[in-house]
Amino acid sequence: MLAAAHWTGNVDPVAFTIGDLEIAWYGIIITCAMLIGLVVAMLRGKKQGLVVDDFVEIFLLAIPLAIIGARIGYVMVRPEYFPSDFTWDDFVRVIAVWDGGLTIMTGVPFGILGGAIWCKIRKVNLLDLADVIVPVILLSQGIGRWGNFCNQEIFGAEITNPALQWFPMAVYINRLGGFYQALFFYEMVLDIAFFAAMMIIQRHLKLRGSGLLMYAFSYGLIRFIMEFFRDDGDIYEVFNYNQLICALVAVAAAVILIVLIVKKLKKGEKIWYGKGGIPPEEKVHFAPYHRPEKKAAGK
Image 1 (cartoon, rainbow, N blue to C red):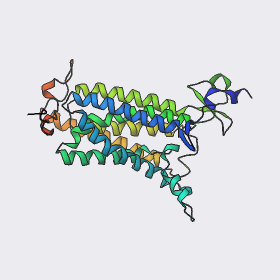
Image 2 (image 1 turned 60 degrees about the vertical axis):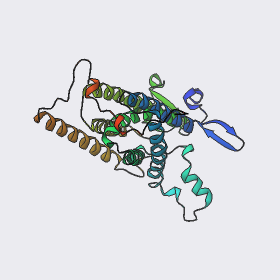
Image 3 (image 1 turned 180 degrees about the horizontal axis):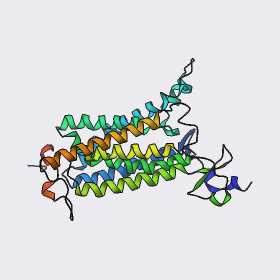
Image 4 (image 1 turned 135 degrees about the horizontal axis):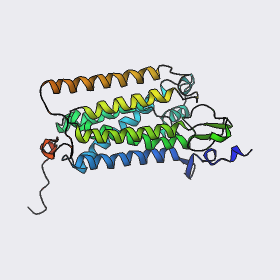
């Protein structure tokens, strides 16, 4: 069958093996997405006084917690991961993030918890840090969606019209033997587009917490829209309130953001800077929170 030979259906989810250990493309892509996000966050934070050591500390706290939270959110609503005769192999299957299965909605709060721990230790305002880092999560999510492509996950309705059976309109799903909407790609485009929009807005909008709120609005709205198209039987059969939660998150974030803006404007505070963006002297600077500089050797 010609369709079965389409390249989108012939991607091996395993990148390579080391002995009996299979290294999946999913794990490689997710790792690369996190590292790219870290680099972008570093570039953003550098302009506000954050240094590499700060991000290494945040990374070591937030990323493991985010992965744990994302995996917990995925497996806890799937009873098949917890048979009555639970064995060691079942436990390994539960923690096997390298095989796919992460829920961003529970991963992000755990990651923010890691950031909150760092802020508590370093006496940094959490919202100031979130405004630098959280928007970048959307970029990492967009890149990470290619991991779902390699696992043949996140797709929409079947496409039977041969004229539409081309990538990125569609992907071929081997286990179903047909072309389906390339939902992972649609979501990737929206993630990156909303990330770019947030970068532009944050250049001009001076409002503590705006980065966190814009992320919550963007991700909630994107997922709300995507759930209308999702048809892979992976969400609605186990948790059919996902779309409602996304809608509530998006609306709540938008309302809070609007309320904060109105309050600032009523106080006569300037929150929007036109051409040129927020001047350096008006931006949040983290330098006062830094640890003392190391003394040069021999001094």
